[in-house]
Length: 354
Image (tube, rainbow, N blue to C red; front, top):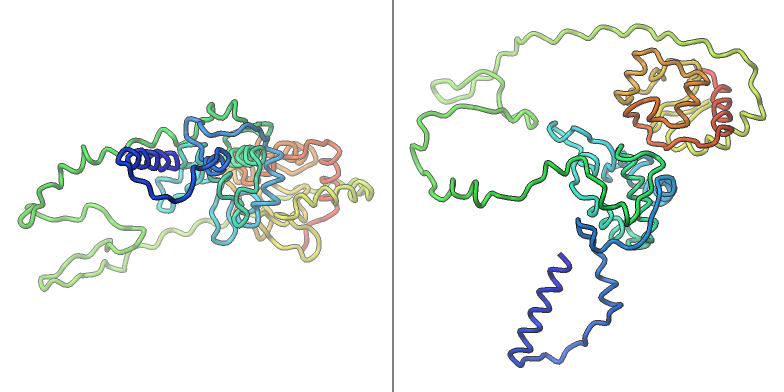
């Protein structure tokens, strides 16, 4: 759009010069002044600055600059936009439009972040910061792995998940001819309901229209849906009986600070984005009390009887998505084996509360 406006302005100036008209206002823009405005990025990559950024760097920037509005894992805070998830939701009553479910061009993501974010401090991010943030957003949307680095060199190789579902607007050719001659009466032999506005709940499901024209509501005697069977009591594995290594648990407490934005432990802990982790060690996956917002992957692990023992916790903390496909926990994982062992020992020190 910006390039189009510049072209239109240039044509107007040439036209004025040809007619010998001048207004005596302003001066020609300097090259650096034009460059300061010319920061838009096209789908073909034109306008991309030099630079690169990886997922881990992007995560750090996101937590510091973006999470207060968009949530720790792109889930959205308050009424701010959701940035992650929404895969296969476009056909639902309430679609979730994110870069992983809807957007056709990665250049739009880079352009918007670089030009307009963070809110209230626009254009404060360097090119490298923007590449890193976009890489992290791609990771949150399951488009790349946690070791991915985005740069100007590989930017054009990215294929957006929903890109093939966009097409050029052809309504002038396909729809306009159908409405050039409006029908005013007797346009159809009969009228019948062919679809229900179920989301708005304004189309009656039954009944009809009486002879005097009043609507007859549907009968309220429809059979009630069968109640879902009560879930069986969870069988929780007994925690390992080895004594707690106090020094290792203390080290784990420091590492666990990375997790505290979503998880709490100890007396008085409350549910946040993720469940309370008291008693998680030795428990069946997806069975923490007072938490129901588990992903389908976690529910599958629960049904399969996955136990959060030391080995499974270590694997999950290393690369969460390798253990639980589709997990909502977008934390990239802990690279250090020592850090993982410390966090596990720390969690072991918090048994389930009554």
